Image (cartoon, rainbow, N blue to C red; front, side, top):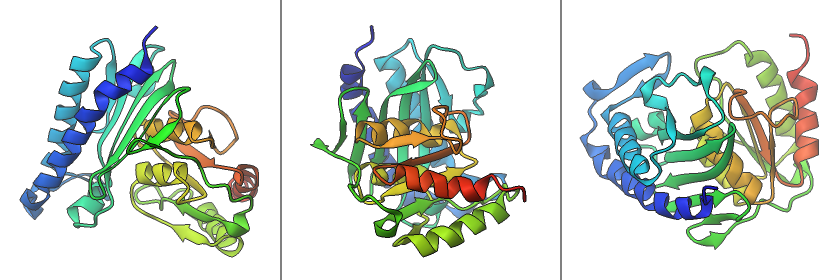
Length: 268
């Protein structure tokens, strides 16, 4: 049986080193280097080279695992029960390209389509969030827990706005109206991995977003769970990594989920 805690310890330096390289490259990116993969879906050589660095380092550590990675056009429809590194080499590319210091590397390892370890590294603050199954969650070697807030009324929430698929915009805006009135407020950071990491350590009480990819959530899911929180899809099911939707929180989870469901599943 693979030792996820030991593997995590070996993988952390690779992720941190790649994050520090990303920081060193920010001044080298010019407007002509930006590629549009789709509407508001940007990429640069930094994303691509960071992914190559991560793949090289992680392959050396655990060659048995395959890869699901954002910049490799990974086809995850046929993912099996084996081990897969799930990589977003630069989550928050738009922030990065606009010099907004909110972006991160997100790396998870899944087995049987569920994460067994996760790492999220935010290089601007030099913050490494990480967890392995059954061993707790940490921020820079200090144990973290989700917020103890028990109601939406005492909660600060995070989400992500639709930026290329606007088919669910009406239900989303209706949900935002209700959450604005029931909470301390909502924040949109522009990087799902950071939203998940901040929920795990209690800076946010909860996070939800739709239309996400496996590399957006694989690491954050296990970090929140190991920090004592709950993570499901919008129906309350355990399939999150490949569902495209996620909601995570601590003690407010039931109230948060029921509020979301009342708006999300209306017939618009």
